[in-house]
Amino acid sequence: MLLNNRLVHVLPCGGYSNVIDLADDVVRNNLLGKKASICIILDLDIKTNAENYIVHNNIANNIPLNYLPIESLEKYLRNKLVKNVDHALFRRLNDYIFQQKSLTEIVNDYTQNNNADNDNNGKRFYKLIDTELRERRKDRNELIEMIVEYLFEKNDDMIKKTTSFLTAQLKKNNNF
Image (tube, rainbow, N blue to C red; front, side):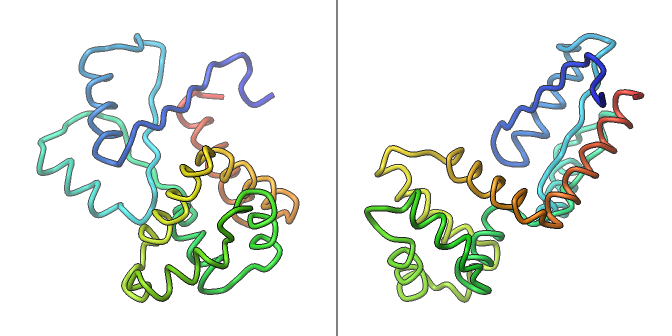
């Protein structure tokens, strides 16, 4: 009902600077036409960097920056698999994705060899996970699908916040 025959296309195109540059290019060159609207949604943890990037690169368009009301995937995984372990999620990922090199081994490698205390954004931890995924010919999407399914099953607040946020963005940008 929400979309009412509207086309919504999500285009992940790299880091925040790539997203901002692409949106600027789309607007400057009118690539979507006059009836289309564009919405930039970034991770909340890069808000200052994104705003500084826009100022430093003299980007002047009317596309508002929006930030997800949840932590990034990297921070979420670090929190739920290392810091405050969610045992049900850990077990599920270990059983279905990390069958050859266990998640326990990855976490141990991370905590012992990767300066985990200085990895506040979780990027070092995610790099270890991503490396294992690639070695097993799996991709990030499998991991994300499993996490999202888990969050829906738990009726987690992250799903509620994200759904409310995206619904508000769609309404605001498409006059629903």
